Image 1: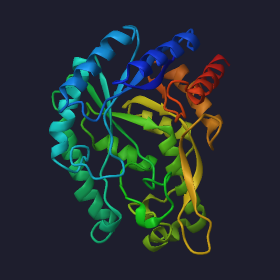
Image 2: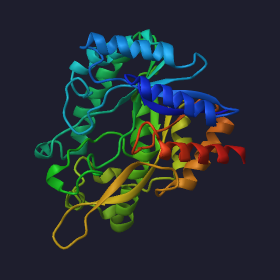
Image 3: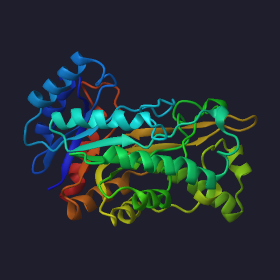
Length: 343
């Protein structure tokens, strides 16, 4: 039996109750769970923390397999949420302590190393420097974050360009050189402390791989940093422009490590191109309903693979919705996955 999750804000009694009702209604013959989102003020606001703990303990059935997701700051350099900063060590350890108090065993965090558009200059334009100075810091801090923790922290892959679902203006795009390709993710997992887990986000990988494959088809091995910068792709380097495999093949390659402990499933649509004179700009669509983006059949194949060979890996349908107390997009995606698992 697969473990199927829906996301809900841990601070919202209404969201948790409604998600439980949806899972009880639709998920028959499979295990259930919730991807519980932690509030940004979880540590500093005592009232918020108490409400969060009460909600999680009293509103979710004890049989559920839940995953917790830390607060995020994907577009802004927040030292507490940025793994290049020492402040992230104490912050994530404190979040993990609250999650453990709530009964959690897995906490997903973003691999944030956000830089502003204005910071795109030497030495950050050199991939060798980034490997040594950015990734080395991230691994050093992660080692301290996970030391002797009574739960698993799982780092999530990211899309690019950041904010590319909101704007096509290059001057408004921040950048983050972390975890875009399968090769990067494999190397990251190999270097990481053995107790660190990995969270694979299919929408993020779909966005990154689609653009990388387009650039690889256009430029091949002759691609230069200048070509990438013309596309507004700061934080992406020529060594990363390598043909990326399908969603299912990417998962298989990464799960050879046995480190994927959470899967966030959503489709992705469109393909980002910058706002430039004489060209049509385009945003990408993150967290799309399954079948409404570019990867629907691949996602259903991946769900079947996990059901058959990795039944203890939670699949969270991390679909954007227009109304969190209706969730029509998530319901349709859940039904599509359930139909696929019956085949």
